[in-house]
Length: 353
Image 1 (cartoon, one colour):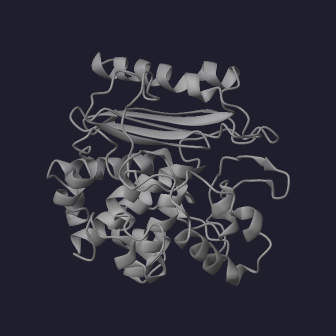
Image 2 (tube, one colour; image 1 turned 30 degrees about the horizontal axis):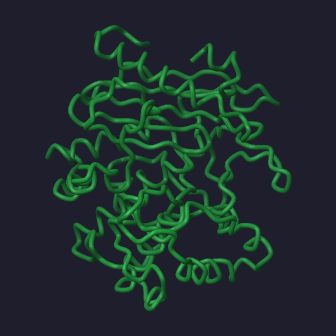
């Protein structure tokens, strides 16, 4: 980690590593802002980017399924009237969660959204999402797509009758005693905390305590695909609760074990679990030390989390690798090396502190 800071992989980061519920490493490295030189601490709050998908939208859907308000096979046309008669009408919640919907990977919606009054932005986006042509028949290809989780956030809001940020806070974070996972809605003051700076944006300036994702930012800071902020300890506490629920332990009834197992188990054809990623390809970002029964996710800002369900080996890496610019991709080669070194340490029962 020290070498990574010196080598420009990221200006600053927090690393948390645990085994079987015991944290063996929780350390901060580098700076939150290259301009001020402020040091990262273990309490620094990072923009979690796409970790929003497994750590906010997915738990919200687990709760709604436990309530009996939808199932993995619920179709969009049955959940959102806007999809009736449209290309993605028969796409299911499971296909959205596994990224097999056939929808495109990404669209620069923010270019148009920024030109609209705030009150017109969500209606415009929902109209566009509901009429987006599919690039492949549902269920035939895996294409990681932000659009899938934009729609899933919309599903949560429609069924719950609350914004995603409020619903997941009420049903998951607060009952678990997690107060350092939250969205930053542009309409409300930024919660006081030390934030890691991200990109120096040409039209927004230096981003600090403001979501980096362009589409989420244009929509006010709360979306199903991005917008969550948090500390490494908060991410770990939620992962620990998810693993406990999977194993039928703990979580205080917040996360239903039956549904957690339904989400985390990979598909019969080996595709991604619902809402999470798993190790895949010749060089997974988590390296080769985690077992096949591992779930996790990456985030564009330089964040990641990986958890081996069987061993409990868990690694949370939060960095601001997009500070001051998103062109820095050194983290791609660094992540596998780091995770293999950490898991070797966890297995050998040495102190990582």
